[in-house]
Image 1 (cartoon, rainbow, N blue to C red):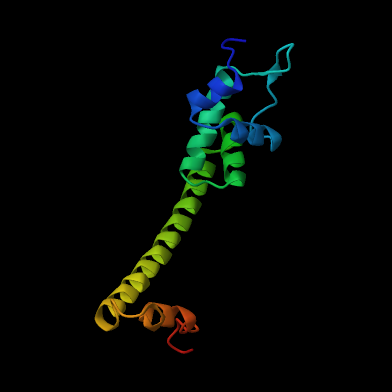
Image 2 (cartoon, rainbow, N blue to C red):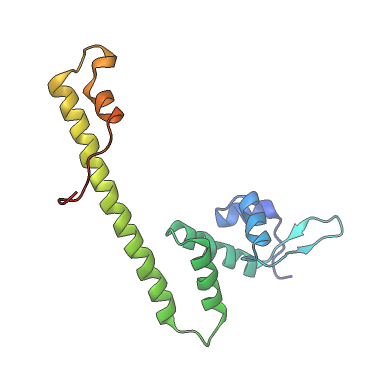
Length: 145
């Protein structure tokens, strides 16, 4: 083995924790490691490279199944770079949708704070417009509802 790493050193060098490494092994994203006579796992530089790749994919928000596909792309010359681009585009679309939802949430929370400042700030808690608003059914979002 070109570089014997324990699970602790692998975790440290890859920025991943040992339980996550064991999970990736369990679901097949990482191959089962070699073991010493004592039973301790031993990893090499290829394992470090692959784990770093997986962690970076996760940092970019790729779900496990997309990570699995991206890992396959690194090993399969028959697959096209377009597959990686398509997965990245799919993830980008999902992130943009989440941002849109977060911006709507931000606006709603800002309105709650504004309403409280204008109507009841400093008054008794049970009379707070924020609490009243949160106890009501949400208003329909579409114009024809």
